[in-house]
Length: 277
Image 1 (tube, rainbow, N blue to C red):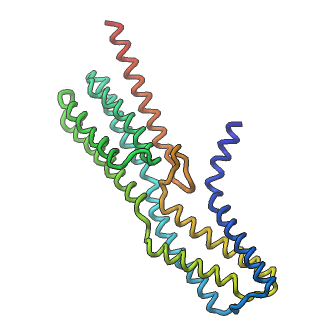
Image 2 (cartoon, rainbow, N blue to C red; image 1 turned 60 degrees about the vertical axis):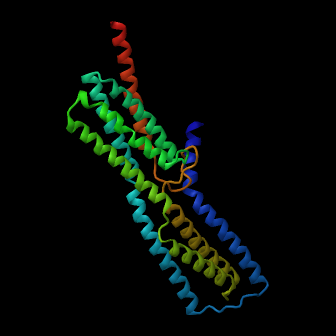
Image 3 (cartoon, rainbow, N blue to C red; image 1 turned 45 degrees about the vertical axis):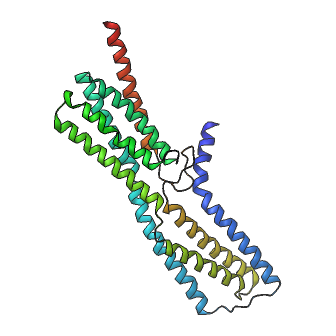
């Protein structure tokens, strides 16, 4: 039963946009059918109408191509973020195992809390500035590592910290910036004009007009909504579930689990060492 529910939850985001576009197309079809029955068509099917539809599809394709390029770049960001987090956690574990450094153990706990905060930030439970302050807070632990390790070890940790802050800034920019906002507005306006033209253009017989208008309305509506959805690939609900075609956060879930295992190992080893004394 749980497996079936999981499949349904995974299926719904993929079909959300096509179903919404279908609902819009059905409304357009009903209005078109009413206008056909009332003989209220006023626009003749001329080459200008075809040109208008072609121009609209061209604009939508141009915007979609730009959004897809940003989406493909954004696909790498959660994985790069998880890699940087785990790299710091692994170095903390090594420092504790070989030097028994208490700051390394504390930093490992801090990394687990930071990963949880990072996932909350994706769900908009954490503000960007607060998250950045926590990322820069790693510097205090790195300074505490100086008596236990060499300088180049700390330099490498600082590089990972800077990479994490750079990725967070990039994700924040992607979430807050709309790709060619004026192009989006123009595409929506032209699509609305095309749909109005399709509702009043003369096409015989009536069933052909209803079918063709419905298909074109569904196609254009789906493209508009797909562009809006892909423009923000990090739009999750409060539970971290994708609202549409969002990028998977599974790398962060995996790194949280692995950091928790490292911390559990350190804590259990510390308890065993204290009992042996």
